[in-house]
Image (cartoon, rainbow, N blue to C red; front, side):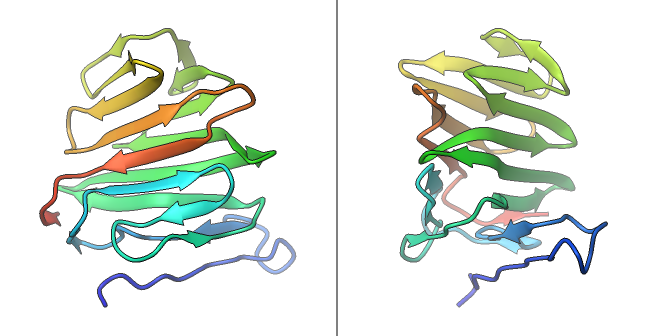
Length: 166
């Protein structure tokens, strides 16, 4: 189908300058992306639920890209950077080259730590009950996560239930 799962692994000794130890799961990686469902998510345990298809499990300590797409020239990428004891401990949400990093219950935007709510030109990050949400103002994207003891047990991304085109 349209969604093919593929894995890229660059062994450190062979390609020391190219994203060492980097897995990519482009559930939404194309110029013309169609989603029949509007949610993809991952759990700290390594279970991934793509927009379409069955959940699957990946055991790795490498960086894993949950979501990558381009919309009207804006690139979006969500990457799990660190994972410990069944929890994600560091996640990066990169929209239009603005890097939001979640770790230790904190939010950093472009390497500056902010308290919530954070409401700027490009995105709004706020508490939503026991969850935290990031709503992009330039993409039809919402990211929701839960800060628990020891890390982030899950993170989910929502896109509109329609074609997203460049």
